[in-house]
Amino acid sequence: MAGLTPDQKAAILLLSLDKSTSAEVLKYLNEEHIQRVAFRMAESKAVSQNLRSTVLDEFYQLCLEQGFSIGGGLEYAKELLTEALGQDRCSEIISKMSTFIKSKPFDFLKKVDPNEIIDFLKAERNQTVALILSFIDSAQGSVILSSFDEERQADIIIRVAKMSKISPEIVKDVEREVKNKISNFLGETTSTDIVGINIAADILSSIDRGTKVNIFDRVEETNQELAEELKKRMFLFEDIVSLDPRHAQIVLSRVPNSDLAMALKSTSDRMKNFVFKNISARAKEIINQEMDMMGRIRLSEVLEAQQKIVGIVHELEQNQEIVISKDSSDKLVG
Image (cartoon, rainbow, N blue to C red; front, top):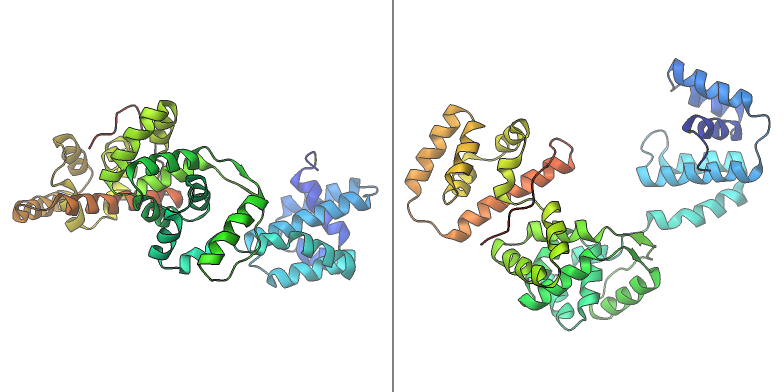
């Protein structure tokens, strides 16, 4: 169905429904869109049952993936499919697509005490740990990764970065093994594409700086090319200076002055100058006053404040409010 345009798919969908339903749908389209779809409907002399079913399958999958929040939700989507194909065919499609509404693999681990997960994984092979880290969120993954010794940390992150397609049978086997240790609800898995290098970078971005440096040193010893690729996809506090000034201003406007003062306490003059250029004169004055009043502080407090700011950067990027673009050629140092 790769050769069909969106207008052609919409036309086939509307032709598959009864006239009153199709007319109701058309009310929500603008005039230009109605003309385009109507033209495609008019030129469709005959639509094969196979093509019709394929378009309806795609429509139902789209409803599942996007939550189909308008109209009557998924129930309304099922009603449309029943109207178009009949109850038996609708049930077949629903059964076929049901995997899209199942839980993501290892989602149940969100409800489990991290210490229980760590205790279990300490005895597991690195490949098993890497597989689990590939599915859970990066914040939880960073906690788990931090619990291992330096040698295992580097090996695990390399394995995560190299992952692509994962066999559903392998995922099921690992889930079954985890379930024997951690009793919780478990849903069926589906074949899932994993961009391992991005997941590994997210985990490393969330982990404490000392651990991050140690992992990078070991990864560079083992695979220099992979280490460079990870750097390209990561964002460190020092990389704020590489942001477009407009985007830097958005980031800094979301950071409390107290956190910014703490984060800048042990940074370079270049970093301080960049930040001060992108905040108001009043904010600069307040931050300088707070820094002067701090006296001696623990490095861990500085790193924690910096990590909070990195978290804000990632959140803004995910919301498409800023764009991260940086040169990753600089070597990561402690």
